Length: 73
Image 1 (cartoon, rainbow, N blue to C red):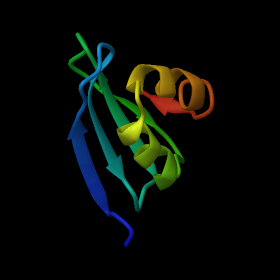
Image 2 (cartoon, helix red, strand yellow):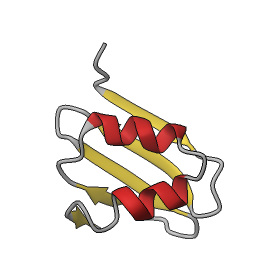
Image 3 (cartoon, rainbow, N blue to C red):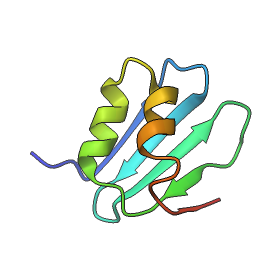
């Protein structure tokens, strides 16, 4: 079943919260210490799911999201 919108607080030393908007394929990421999110564009739902289940959200983000998707801040 596809998700429409989802959010999660992560147990991460780098990322506080993530939200995913499936219709817009937008992943919003709040890094620790930042009040405004970064909105990563055209992110597949599978990438969001993998981020949620990664052993290290920060490492997953750096390897699979940071330089692979455009973003707005």
